[in-house]
Length: 135
Image 1 (cartoon, helix red, strand yellow):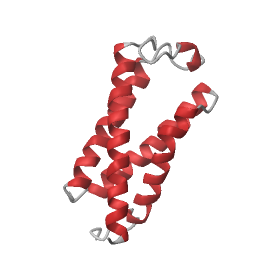
Image 2: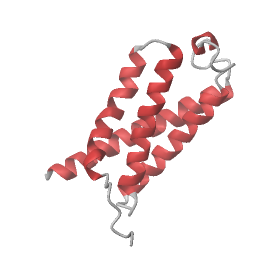
Image 3: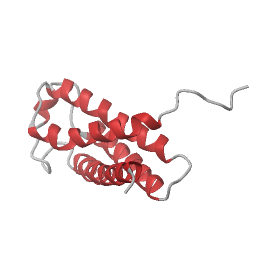
Image 4: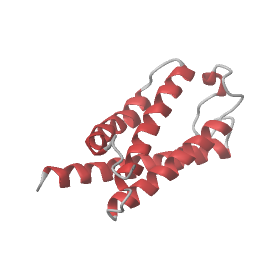
């Protein structure tokens, strides 16, 4: 098996895992903005947000983007690596902001964050900083 095929399969697993997690977690935060479905008190937000509705909407959006990226990578769509890059680096920003807001790192950050770092490393060589279509 070629290395690129192996990396693509690893990326697909990460996209599926993070996409489903984002959709489920975001939906639970929207449906229970007081955090009761996830057993997280709003006090962990340290007043940055009144409740979990805005984080839930953002997380659901990230889950949707990641699910779309999964489908694009699976079908080898023309924009598959662009969408996967947006997803992985979007989640890296999500985790950085989340850690800054809650002011601590818990085991869930490792469980959900480490796969994102791996995915970010996989897509990094595919990011092109040069647009050959510019005149």
